[in-house]
Length: 375
Image (cartoon, rainbow, N blue to C red; front, side, top):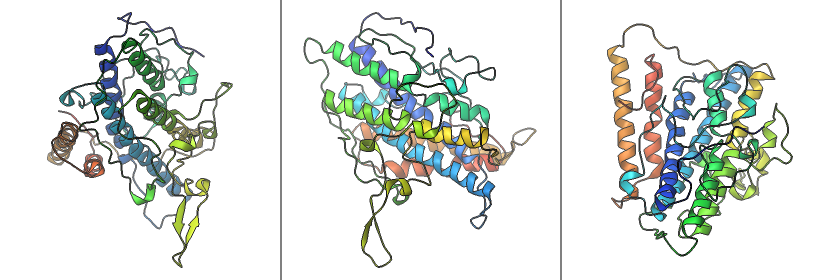
C-alpha cells in the first residue's frame, strides 16, 4: 500500500529547511479552510421543519464540514505558534493559498480514493474549488489521509514529498531534533503566540488538555499529536484493505472535543455520554473518518449528494462580481488580522475573524458563481 519513495533536493536538515516545513504546515492548514468552506457553503440547506431523510443528511454533512473547519482553526493556531517558536518572521507565516497549483512537500496517497477516476496520486496535492461532489469529497479525503497508509520513512534526513500531512509533521519534528542535536538553535520564544482558542457553545470543548503556546520541543510534539489525531485518528493496526469504516479512525480522547457536563431543565448538572453528545457532528472520529462517513453514506448506503447551488452560465454579472469582490476583500482582511495577531499588533477574537468569512462564499454560490478567495 505504499507509494513510490519520495526524493528530496536536500540531504541534510538545516534551520531554514525546518522553518520552510513549519511555514508549509501553516499553508496546509490555511489551504483547508477556504476549500472546506467553499464545499460546505455550496450545500443548499433545507428548511428547519424539513425532517426528510434527504434534508437530515444535507444538514449533517454541512455540520460535519463546519466542525472540521473549527478544528482546522485550532491547527492553524498551533502551526503558527510553532513558526514563532522556530523564529519564523510573523510576516512570512500567513499566505493566501492558490488553488489549482501544488502544495509544497505533499503528495497524498489514499487507498480509499485510488482507482481509474483519480489515478494520479503520485502528484503533489492540487485542489480545485467547487461544490460538494465526488471530486471535491475525494480531495478532502486525500488531504486528511492517515499516515499508516504509506510505509514509514526515516526522517532523520529529508525525504519528501510526503504521502500524508502526518508524515510531514513527523519529518518537521525529526528535523528540529537533527538541527538541535548539538545544542539550542531555535529560541522557542512564546512572544506573540496565541492561546485564545474558543469554540461556539454547540461545539463546546471540555478543556484543551495541551499547551496552546509552544515553548519547548515537548510542546511541539503535543501540538503535532493533536493535529494528527484530530485529522487522521488513532493508528490502524494492522492496516486493512478498503473499503474502510469511519469507526476505524477515532480521535484519541486526549485530543477530542465534547461537552461532558450539561444542564437538565431543573438546572442540575448531568454527565453526558460523549458518544451521544458527538453523534450529530461525529467528533469522536477524525476528519478523515467524518469525511469517510459522508463517502460511505453515498457509496454504500444509497444516499445522494446534498443539493448544491447551480453555477450560472454566461458572462459574469454585476452581482457575481460584487460577491467575489467582497469575499476577496474579506479574506484579505482575515490574513491581515492573523498577521497582526502573531506580529504583536494587538488582540483580536480568533473566531470572529473566521465567522465574518462564513457568509461570503455563500453569497457567491447564491449569485451562481464558484467562490474565489484570491484575485
